Image 1 (cartoon, one colour):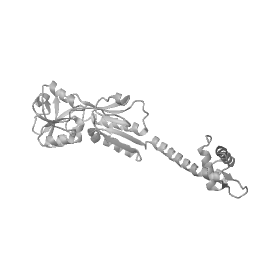
Image 2 (tube, one colour; image 1 turned 90 degrees about the vertical axis):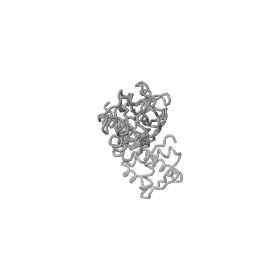
Image 3 (tube, one colour; image 1 turned 180 degrees about the horizontal axis):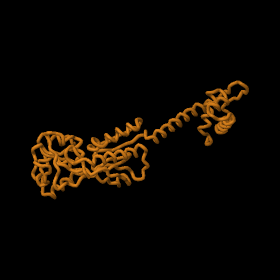
Image 4 (cartoon, helix red, strand yellow; image 1 turned 180 degrees about the vertical axis):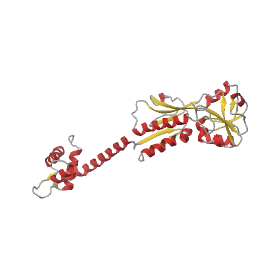
Length: 311
């Protein structure tokens, strides 16, 4: 039945529902002869008559073969209609998007992206996953936020847009260090709570060494909020990127004080990745646009005082 077409099935269903070729033609916007031609093509495709045609004013009657064709034909028509609706929704941006993220982006950038996508496309399906392995993979994700270069060899070629430089700041107890900035050498021997030795943390600790500082790491955890809770408890200070500091509201916490470091530790780069050569869905393309807009706004804020990276 390689010659079977959906329009032939639609004509058959209309004839059954209207009871005549003439009324079916009027409903479909065809001439009666066009409907007759479509039914004839359907009958050639299935190898037999699908209607008995008594002639005159009497309604046409479906044949046993026609009943079989109609049963499955209606299923095909329904699936075709669902497909057309899904394609229309996809083109309108109401499809599905899978995004990988990490905690400080999840707290600062991603909520704005999600809210705006949902406002613009109420029917969209957004799936988020937050993992911070040493070697993240895009896999089946449409987009992946990551704070540094991504090893494309694990997933094939990748492309990205850099969103912002995220400078490192010192968060300490209110009276631990005087002044706006703190020399890195002042951290020599000082108690510090820190991330585990993964991701960007080794590079941060290398900066301590270059400055002649050897802080005492008294606690390690991947949780930014937990680190800041330990700073509040007096366990030690923490060196964290600005996004994490801003997300936790540390700059407005009377128990804490946020300092610049001198010399500055090279900032981490927050990037948004996707597979190279992948055609973006309208939803993914819009998510990239929004993320770039949000990051641009953040980059214009001052570093200290509930603040953000200046570049």
